Length: 341
Image (tube, rainbow, N blue to C red; front, side, top):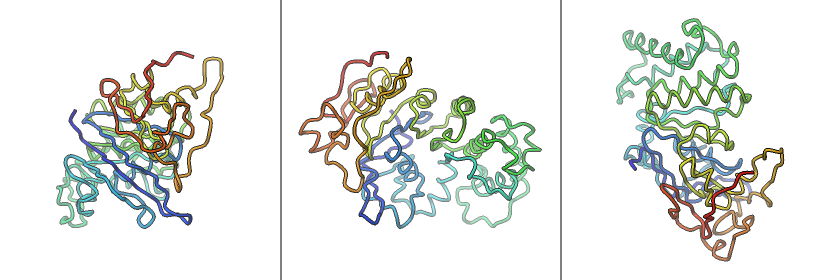
Protein backbone atom coordinates (compact mmCIF):
# COMPACT_ATOMS: atom_id res chain seq x y z
CA UNK A 1 0.00 0.00 0.00
CA UNK A 2 1.39 3.41 -0.96
CA UNK A 3 2.14 5.67 1.98
CA UNK A 4 1.40 9.38 2.21
CA UNK A 5 2.59 9.52 5.82
CA UNK A 6 4.74 7.01 7.68
CA UNK A 7 5.61 7.41 11.36
CA UNK A 8 8.35 4.98 12.29
CA UNK A 9 9.60 4.07 15.77
CA UNK A 10 8.84 7.52 17.18
CA UNK A 11 9.84 8.17 20.78
CA UNK A 12 8.92 11.43 22.52
CA UNK A 13 9.20 12.50 26.15
CA UNK A 14 8.11 15.52 28.15
CA UNK A 15 10.22 17.15 30.84
CA UNK A 16 8.55 17.16 34.26
CA UNK A 17 9.71 18.01 37.77
CA UNK A 18 9.74 14.28 38.58
CA UNK A 19 11.71 13.30 35.48
CA UNK A 20 10.98 12.63 31.80
CA UNK A 21 7.55 11.28 30.95
CA UNK A 22 7.91 8.81 28.05
CA UNK A 23 4.73 9.79 26.22
CA UNK A 24 5.44 8.00 22.92
CA UNK A 25 7.38 4.75 23.04
CA UNK A 26 8.35 3.57 19.56
CA UNK A 27 5.09 4.46 17.80
CA UNK A 28 4.68 3.44 14.15
CA UNK A 29 1.75 4.00 11.80
CA UNK A 30 1.06 4.80 8.15
CA UNK A 31 -1.64 6.58 6.16
CA UNK A 32 -2.35 5.98 2.49
CA UNK A 33 -3.61 8.65 0.06
CA UNK A 34 -7.34 9.19 0.56
CA UNK A 35 -7.45 7.07 3.73
CA UNK A 36 -9.06 8.04 7.04
CA UNK A 37 -7.10 6.50 9.92
CA UNK A 38 -8.50 6.61 13.42
CA UNK A 39 -6.10 6.90 16.35
CA UNK A 40 -8.00 5.65 19.41
CA UNK A 41 -7.20 5.08 23.04
CA UNK A 42 -7.86 6.31 26.56
CA UNK A 43 -7.16 9.91 27.55
CA UNK A 44 -3.43 10.42 28.10
CA UNK A 45 -2.34 7.63 25.76
CA UNK A 46 -0.38 10.02 23.51
CA UNK A 47 -2.82 10.66 20.65
CA UNK A 48 -2.52 14.44 20.73
CA UNK A 49 1.25 14.30 21.20
CA UNK A 50 1.56 12.16 18.07
CA UNK A 51 -0.67 14.57 16.12
CA UNK A 52 1.40 17.54 17.27
CA UNK A 53 4.64 15.74 16.44
CA UNK A 54 3.46 15.25 12.85
CA UNK A 55 2.55 18.94 12.65
CA UNK A 56 5.87 19.94 14.21
CA UNK A 57 4.22 21.93 17.01
CA UNK A 58 5.42 20.07 20.10
CA UNK A 59 6.09 22.57 22.93
CA UNK A 60 9.64 23.78 22.56
CA UNK A 61 11.77 23.09 25.62
CA UNK A 62 9.21 20.76 27.24
CA UNK A 63 9.12 18.02 24.60
CA UNK A 64 12.04 16.03 23.23
CA UNK A 65 12.09 13.69 20.23
CA UNK A 66 14.57 10.92 21.04
CA UNK A 67 14.39 8.86 17.86
CA UNK A 68 12.20 7.93 14.92
CA UNK A 69 11.02 9.29 11.59
CA UNK A 70 7.97 11.18 10.35
CA UNK A 71 8.08 10.73 6.58
CA UNK A 72 5.56 12.76 4.59
CA UNK A 73 5.61 12.37 0.79
CA UNK A 74 9.17 11.08 1.02
CA UNK A 75 10.47 13.87 3.32
CA UNK A 76 11.44 13.21 6.94
CA UNK A 77 9.85 16.17 8.70
CA UNK A 78 12.06 15.73 11.76
CA UNK A 79 15.17 16.38 9.68
CA UNK A 80 13.85 18.99 7.23
CA UNK A 81 14.72 22.67 7.56
CA UNK A 82 12.02 24.04 9.96
CA UNK A 83 11.51 27.06 7.69
CA UNK A 84 10.79 24.80 4.72
CA UNK A 85 8.33 22.76 6.81
CA UNK A 86 6.54 25.94 7.85
CA UNK A 87 6.43 27.45 4.34
CA UNK A 88 5.64 24.34 2.32
CA UNK A 89 3.98 21.78 4.59
CA UNK A 90 2.47 22.97 7.87
CA UNK A 91 -0.81 24.73 7.19
CA UNK A 92 -0.63 23.90 3.48
CA UNK A 93 0.03 20.22 2.70
CA UNK A 94 -0.86 19.23 6.29
CA UNK A 95 -3.65 21.12 8.06
CA UNK A 96 -5.35 20.81 11.44
CA UNK A 97 -8.87 20.71 12.88
CA UNK A 98 -8.68 21.49 16.60
CA UNK A 99 -10.69 19.97 19.39
CA UNK A 100 -12.33 23.15 20.66
CA UNK A 101 -13.98 25.51 18.14
CA UNK A 102 -14.83 27.96 20.93
CA UNK A 103 -11.23 29.00 21.63
CA UNK A 104 -9.77 28.56 18.14
CA UNK A 105 -10.88 31.91 16.71
CA UNK A 106 -9.69 35.35 17.74
CA UNK A 107 -12.86 36.88 19.24
CA UNK A 108 -12.16 40.48 18.12
CA UNK A 109 -11.74 39.90 14.36
CA UNK A 110 -14.42 38.89 11.90
CA UNK A 111 -14.46 35.40 10.49
CA UNK A 112 -13.75 36.85 7.05
CA UNK A 113 -10.62 38.62 8.25
CA UNK A 114 -9.31 35.41 9.81
CA UNK A 115 -10.11 33.27 6.79
CA UNK A 116 -8.45 35.70 4.40
CA UNK A 117 -5.39 36.00 6.67
CA UNK A 118 -5.05 32.24 6.37
CA UNK A 119 -5.31 32.43 2.60
CA UNK A 120 -2.81 35.25 2.36
CA UNK A 121 -0.01 32.95 3.55
CA UNK A 122 -1.34 29.42 2.97
CA UNK A 123 -3.36 29.70 -0.24
CA UNK A 124 -2.75 26.95 -2.83
CA UNK A 125 -2.24 29.83 -5.29
CA UNK A 126 0.77 31.07 -3.34
CA UNK A 127 4.05 29.71 -4.76
CA UNK A 128 6.05 27.29 -2.60
CA UNK A 129 8.82 29.85 -2.18
CA UNK A 130 6.41 32.08 -0.26
CA UNK A 131 9.17 33.48 1.94
CA UNK A 132 10.32 35.73 -0.91
CA UNK A 133 6.90 37.31 -1.32
CA UNK A 134 6.31 40.75 0.23
CA UNK A 135 3.56 41.35 2.78
CA UNK A 136 1.14 42.76 0.16
CA UNK A 137 -1.77 40.65 -1.07
CA UNK A 138 -2.00 40.83 -4.91
CA UNK A 139 -5.50 41.88 -5.98
CA UNK A 140 -6.06 39.08 -8.49
CA UNK A 141 -5.04 36.39 -6.00
CA UNK A 142 -7.16 38.01 -3.28
CA UNK A 143 -10.23 37.82 -5.52
CA UNK A 144 -9.58 34.16 -6.39
CA UNK A 145 -8.94 33.27 -2.75
CA UNK A 146 -12.10 35.02 -1.60
CA UNK A 147 -14.12 33.08 -4.18
CA UNK A 148 -12.58 29.86 -2.82
CA UNK A 149 -13.54 30.91 0.73
CA UNK A 150 -17.16 31.46 -0.29
CA UNK A 151 -17.21 28.11 -2.10
CA UNK A 152 -15.94 26.16 0.92
CA UNK A 153 -18.37 27.96 3.25
CA UNK A 154 -21.20 26.78 1.03
CA UNK A 155 -19.71 23.27 1.08
CA UNK A 156 -19.69 23.19 4.90
CA UNK A 157 -23.27 24.52 4.93
CA UNK A 158 -22.72 27.96 6.46
CA UNK A 159 -25.84 30.05 5.63
CA UNK A 160 -25.33 33.21 3.55
CA UNK A 161 -21.54 32.86 3.18
CA UNK A 162 -20.93 36.45 1.99
CA UNK A 163 -22.70 37.88 5.04
CA UNK A 164 -21.04 35.34 7.33
CA UNK A 165 -17.63 36.80 6.47
CA UNK A 166 -18.57 40.02 8.25
CA UNK A 167 -19.67 38.33 11.48
CA UNK A 168 -17.65 37.81 14.66
CA UNK A 169 -16.99 34.28 15.96
CA UNK A 170 -19.41 34.62 18.92
CA UNK A 171 -22.27 35.15 16.46
CA UNK A 172 -21.98 31.51 15.33
CA UNK A 173 -23.15 28.41 17.18
CA UNK A 174 -20.66 25.77 18.33
CA UNK A 175 -21.53 23.50 15.41
CA UNK A 176 -21.14 26.36 12.94
CA UNK A 177 -17.76 27.28 14.40
CA UNK A 178 -16.58 23.72 13.95
CA UNK A 179 -17.81 23.84 10.35
CA UNK A 180 -15.69 26.98 9.93
CA UNK A 181 -12.70 25.10 11.37
CA UNK A 182 -13.28 22.32 8.84
CA UNK A 183 -13.49 24.93 6.07
CA UNK A 184 -10.13 26.40 7.15
CA UNK A 185 -8.54 22.95 7.09
CA UNK A 186 -9.71 22.30 3.52
CA UNK A 187 -8.97 25.77 2.08
CA UNK A 188 -5.23 25.21 1.38
CA UNK A 189 -6.13 21.99 -0.52
CA UNK A 190 -4.04 19.79 1.77
CA UNK A 191 -2.96 16.21 1.25
CA UNK A 192 -3.44 15.36 4.94
CA UNK A 193 -5.74 16.74 7.63
CA UNK A 194 -5.11 16.02 11.30
CA UNK A 195 -8.40 16.14 13.21
CA UNK A 196 -7.82 16.13 16.97
CA UNK A 197 -11.09 14.92 18.52
CA UNK A 198 -12.99 17.56 16.51
CA UNK A 199 -16.44 16.66 17.85
CA UNK A 200 -15.65 16.40 21.59
CA UNK A 201 -17.02 19.86 22.47
CA UNK A 202 -20.31 19.33 20.58
CA UNK A 203 -23.57 17.65 21.55
CA UNK A 204 -24.42 14.26 20.09
CA UNK A 205 -26.75 15.37 17.29
CA UNK A 206 -24.30 18.02 16.08
CA UNK A 207 -21.46 15.46 16.28
CA UNK A 208 -23.30 13.21 13.83
CA UNK A 209 -23.83 16.10 11.40
CA UNK A 210 -20.17 17.14 11.57
CA UNK A 211 -18.95 13.57 11.00
CA UNK A 212 -21.19 13.15 7.94
CA UNK A 213 -20.00 16.47 6.55
CA UNK A 214 -16.33 15.66 7.13
CA UNK A 215 -16.66 12.22 5.57
CA UNK A 216 -18.39 13.69 2.50
CA UNK A 217 -15.72 16.37 2.00
CA UNK A 218 -12.89 13.86 2.44
CA UNK A 219 -14.40 11.57 -0.18
CA UNK A 220 -15.09 14.38 -2.66
CA UNK A 221 -11.65 15.96 -2.34
CA UNK A 222 -9.48 12.87 -1.93
CA UNK A 223 -7.84 14.03 1.30
CA UNK A 224 -6.24 11.74 3.89
CA UNK A 225 -7.16 12.19 7.56
CA UNK A 226 -5.54 11.25 10.86
CA UNK A 227 -8.53 11.31 13.20
CA UNK A 228 -7.78 11.12 16.92
CA UNK A 229 -10.61 10.11 19.23
CA UNK A 230 -11.40 8.23 22.43
CA UNK A 231 -14.91 7.48 21.12
CA UNK A 232 -15.14 4.09 19.42
CA UNK A 233 -18.53 4.96 17.93
CA UNK A 234 -17.00 7.97 16.19
CA UNK A 235 -14.15 5.82 14.88
CA UNK A 236 -16.64 3.31 13.47
CA UNK A 237 -18.57 6.11 11.76
CA UNK A 238 -15.75 7.81 9.87
CA UNK A 239 -12.56 5.70 9.75
CA UNK A 240 -11.30 3.25 7.13
CA UNK A 241 -8.69 1.86 9.51
CA UNK A 242 -8.11 2.07 13.25
CA UNK A 243 -4.82 2.22 15.17
CA UNK A 244 -5.08 1.55 18.91
CA UNK A 245 -2.75 3.23 21.40
CA UNK A 246 -2.19 2.45 25.05
CA UNK A 247 0.14 4.43 27.34
CA UNK A 248 2.30 5.63 24.45
CA UNK A 249 2.54 2.33 22.56
CA UNK A 250 0.51 1.24 19.54
CA UNK A 251 -1.22 -2.07 20.17
CA UNK A 252 -2.74 -2.89 16.81
CA UNK A 253 -3.82 -1.61 13.40
CA UNK A 254 -6.77 -3.01 11.50
CA UNK A 255 -9.45 -2.17 8.94
CA UNK A 256 -12.45 -0.79 10.81
CA UNK A 257 -14.65 -3.85 10.23
CA UNK A 258 -11.94 -6.21 11.48
CA UNK A 259 -11.20 -3.96 14.44
CA UNK A 260 -14.75 -4.33 15.73
CA UNK A 261 -15.45 -7.92 14.67
CA UNK A 262 -12.09 -9.53 15.50
CA UNK A 263 -10.24 -7.59 18.24
CA UNK A 264 -7.03 -9.61 18.31
CA UNK A 265 -5.29 -7.64 21.06
CA UNK A 266 -6.47 -8.18 24.67
CA UNK A 267 -6.60 -4.41 25.22
CA UNK A 268 -8.80 -3.92 22.15
CA UNK A 269 -11.17 -6.60 23.38
CA UNK A 270 -11.33 -4.95 26.78
CA UNK A 271 -12.12 -1.62 25.13
CA UNK A 272 -15.02 -3.12 23.19
CA UNK A 273 -16.30 -4.94 26.27
CA UNK A 274 -16.33 -1.63 28.15
CA UNK A 275 -18.95 -0.19 25.77
CA UNK A 276 -22.46 -0.03 27.28
CA UNK A 277 -24.48 -3.17 26.55
CA UNK A 278 -28.06 -3.27 25.26
CA UNK A 279 -29.37 -3.55 28.85
CA UNK A 280 -27.32 -0.55 30.00
CA UNK A 281 -24.59 -2.56 31.73
CA UNK A 282 -21.01 -1.26 31.74
CA UNK A 283 -17.78 -3.16 32.39
CA UNK A 284 -14.58 -1.31 33.15
CA UNK A 285 -10.99 -2.40 32.57
CA UNK A 286 -9.51 -3.43 35.94
CA UNK A 287 -6.36 -1.62 37.05
CA UNK A 288 -4.96 1.82 36.31
CA UNK A 289 -3.27 3.48 33.33
CA UNK A 290 0.48 3.39 34.12
CA UNK A 291 2.59 6.33 35.17
CA UNK A 292 4.56 7.39 32.09
CA UNK A 293 7.46 8.69 34.20
CA UNK A 294 8.13 5.14 35.40
CA UNK A 295 6.14 2.94 33.01
CA UNK A 296 6.05 -0.86 33.09
CA UNK A 297 8.69 -2.64 31.05
CA UNK A 298 7.79 -4.50 27.88
CA UNK A 299 4.14 -4.21 26.90
CA UNK A 300 2.72 -1.43 29.04
CA UNK A 301 -0.68 -3.16 29.20
CA UNK A 302 0.66 -6.30 30.84
CA UNK A 303 -0.19 -5.29 34.47
CA UNK A 304 -3.88 -5.17 33.46
CA UNK A 305 -3.88 -8.10 31.02
CA UNK A 306 -5.30 -11.54 31.91
CA UNK A 307 -3.17 -13.18 29.20
CA UNK A 308 0.15 -11.64 30.30
CA UNK A 309 3.19 -13.86 30.82
CA UNK A 310 6.82 -13.20 31.66
CA UNK A 311 7.56 -12.52 27.99
CA UNK A 312 5.16 -9.56 28.08
CA UNK A 313 7.22 -7.93 30.83
CA UNK A 314 10.43 -8.20 28.81
CA UNK A 315 9.59 -6.62 25.45
CA UNK A 316 6.78 -5.34 23.26
CA UNK A 317 6.83 -7.67 20.26
CA UNK A 318 7.09 -6.54 16.66
CA UNK A 319 3.80 -6.16 14.78
CA UNK A 320 2.57 -9.49 13.38
CA UNK A 321 -0.13 -9.97 10.76
CA UNK A 322 -3.26 -11.79 11.92
CA UNK A 323 -5.38 -10.90 8.88
CA UNK A 324 -5.46 -8.74 5.77
CA UNK A 325 -3.80 -5.42 6.72
CA UNK A 326 -4.52 -6.39 10.33
CA UNK A 327 -1.48 -6.48 12.59
CA UNK A 328 -1.12 -6.74 16.33
CA UNK A 329 1.75 -6.27 18.77
CA UNK A 330 1.06 -8.99 21.31
CA UNK A 331 2.74 -12.20 22.45
CA UNK A 332 -0.68 -13.82 22.91
CA UNK A 333 -3.09 -12.47 20.27
CA UNK A 334 -6.71 -13.58 20.47
CA UNK A 335 -8.20 -15.38 17.49
CA UNK A 336 -11.88 -15.83 18.31
CA UNK A 337 -14.26 -13.17 16.93
CA UNK A 338 -16.08 -10.93 19.38
CA UNK A 339 -19.62 -12.01 20.26
CA UNK A 340 -22.60 -9.73 20.62
CA UNK A 341 -23.63 -8.49 24.02
